[in-house]
Length: 91
Image (tube, rainbow, N blue to C red; front, side):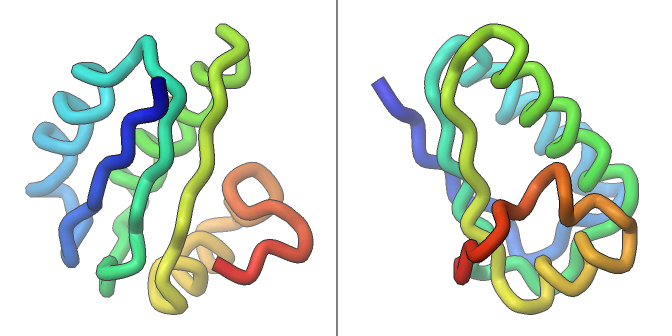
């Protein structure tokens, strides 16, 4: 089964504990993160999302991120695009 989780508009340090809890609650399922509404992605939340992505790959579960333009820009700024955004991915 695939879990689809909508991310909040602001993913700053204050949002990190809630984001981590949300991702851990869905740790055994294939996962789609809907970041279409994200306007700000901070480094701590990006690190949590990256850890989730890497963990999904390690256990053989599917992971995808549908990022807004603002979220994509923050991911690129943090140098995480190669790990979180697929080549040719227009989401």
